[in-house]
Structure formats: structure tokens, C-alpha cells
Picture 1: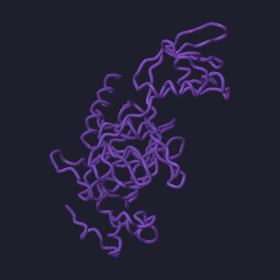
Picture 2: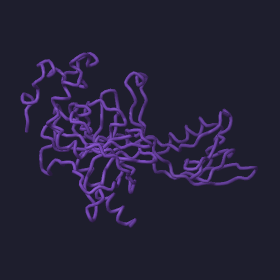
Picture 3: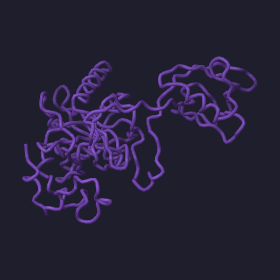
Picture 4: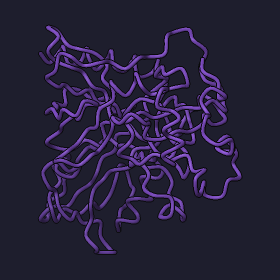
Length: 336
């Protein structure tokens, strides 16, 4: 494995990047400085060939990782972050090709999605070999993009793997501004309200046995007493008729908000609720998640799944990703 002495041929002051006391990582010592990133080019050289930019309607929404080829060798498989995807998906490869992509399967708990692109000459990412030591806190990591230099670099945080609390209970129903009634504002196609069979103008008057709902706020108070996965019964009034509608409580996976968030830059919408993660202090944009993260030996140790704080990104460990990937491929085969 390459040592830091081998890597850091830039001024010695760059080595201070591991310190937590650098004010705002300013000036030439910022980890995002081009000279610092250039130092890691050899580290990401292999993995970047298997890294793609995922775009929706021409706008980058995530990074992705080439994980193999399908039957016949003409279809490539890419894993990426599911919750950021939109319509008209394309994958931009390291060689500059922009290929249409098809979403074929997704996994809710991990927030991973499997894409297909028509290309038989893709280079899969180099996974860390099973049985190799897991990176310890203080280890350097790099996030490849499609360019020769990495998109960003960082250091594995304390707590090598930890559980992230599941999201709060949520039912994403939009209500009108009426303070004294939980009245449904709309039920657009694809919305939670439409999926439940609610209509614009419906009023939720109660939930389950005896819990009265008088306003959107009282509905939220009810949800705080429930957990993701619970099934509840909504008592709905529609044009003078009373209806009972069953709903499965989802998880709000955005995590807690922070008053300083506007100064940090955007965080990922889905950033909690993962069973196992590898935290590191790389500063990524949400649209830079979904791709690989490598150790100093260039092997992929996981997939960046969320920017979760000012200087915290969460990666799903390679073993977790490979298990989910096998499930996604099996799900795809069942559809054929």
C-alpha cells in the first residue's frame, strides 16, 4: 500500500489537512485545491475508468459505478444513488461517451439503483478484495470522478462502521393552508396522496381508533408516535361521505436540519436509515454521491451514498453494496 510520504510531493503543509483545526480549509491548503487533488491521480486511476456521471435531462444528479456486463457482453450495469434519479437518464463515461441509461431495479433501504447502458467495453470498478483489512479511522480516501484527478479526498472518521438511525415516520401528503382542517391540497399523479386514493379537497378527520385530526399539525403529532412500516387507517371525509383508507407509514430519511446548513451547502435528501455505513469527512455535493470511494491502494472500499453533514459523507461498505447488487440483478432477471 502506498504511504503518505509517497503521495505527498506537494508542499509539506498539505499534510496538515488531517488536522481538525484548519480554519475553513482555506487557501492553498484546502483539500479541494487542484494541486492537492492532482496528488491523488494515481490513486484513482483505475477506479475512475469505471466511474460515470449520471445525468437527468442533461443535469448531473449523481455519480455511478460500473459493476459488470450483462449476458452477451453488450449491456453494462451501473450502480448509483436511487433517490436522486429523474427522467431521461444518461451516463457519461470517463472516455467522454454519453449513453442513454435505463433504470431496471432499485433497493429502498440502501438507496441504491441498478442502471443498464448499451456498451460492451466498459471497465468495472476494482473492488477491495474480500478478507483485506477494513480501513481504520485516519485513513485517506478519494472519490473518483470521470476526470484524471479525483472529485474530492477525505479521511475516514472515528467509528469505522456505525448504524444510522432510521428516518422519522412520514406520510408525504400536502395539505392546504387551512389551520383548522387537514385538507388535502392535491393528489397529483405519482404523489403519495394519489397512491393512497386521496383526492384534492378530502379532509382527514381521524386516524386509527379515536385519534382526532383537527389540522395538519395534529396529523404530524400523530405520526411522531408511529414508526416507519406501521400501517394506519385514515378516516377521510369526502363530499359528505366518510371513508377509511389504509396507509403504510414511510420514513422521512432527510435527517435533522441544522441552523447553519445554508452555509455548508446542500445535503443529500436521503441521508439516514442505512444499516451500515463508513463515515468519512470528504465534502461532496449531493450530485457527487452514488459513485465509488477508494483507499490509497486504489481499490474500491464502498459507494458514497449521502452527504450527511458539514464535513461528513457516508459510504456503504463494499460488502453491503455487493450483497444489494446481487439482489438487484436477481430482481432484474425475474422481470425478464
